[in-house]
Length: 273
Image 1 (cartoon, rainbow, N blue to C red):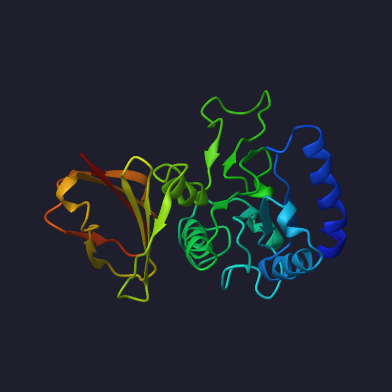
Image 2 (spheres, helix red, strand yellow; image 1 turned 90 degrees about the vertical axis):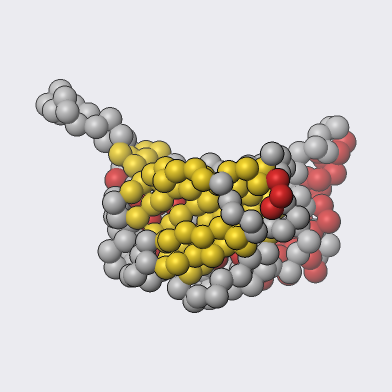
């Protein structure tokens, strides 16, 4: 966005009035698609100062540029905040099937940490990748669809998943619309974890191990729900697994114990009866 927050307000206010006059008040206005977190912080402050925030339904930003480009703290707004675009295209690294090698911007583990940071540090409620599926590997889509010609071997796959596809899958497949993030703390700096309460009472927990070695996990099950816990399922992604189903087991009391492989992401899904 090339305009500032004050200029955005000059559009937001009359646009909101036009939507209301057309009985389209259910359509929300988003603002302001800053190129990075710090840029959107300034845009939001300018929008507020110009009186445009109360006519806005959602604060939206990218995570490409700025100091910082990614969340370092929540934005100063009562509105929900979405990161509506990000990908590793700034360094032109292209699509990668590597989960972890040297923490490049197109590796899966790097994206698992970006998602964790956005949801916890930034209090973001949605994260949208650019591009979901496409024919150019250089654009680093989550799903690459290679162009086929008459000479393309029949054994060539019609599509390929990038490693960061599975980072998004760990969050999107088990955290459902209407979920609320729960407070969760890790005793290890190399172990990052988030937890979410779904509307149906299930709990999803994502655990990232950024160390090379395995880590023993002792996860406290929410005490008010422990008596109703009937099973916990888990999935693993690392250099040898792509959200591979690990299995189901019954939680024991208020603590669930597990081992998290090095440089991996494990999701636990607690089902209650």
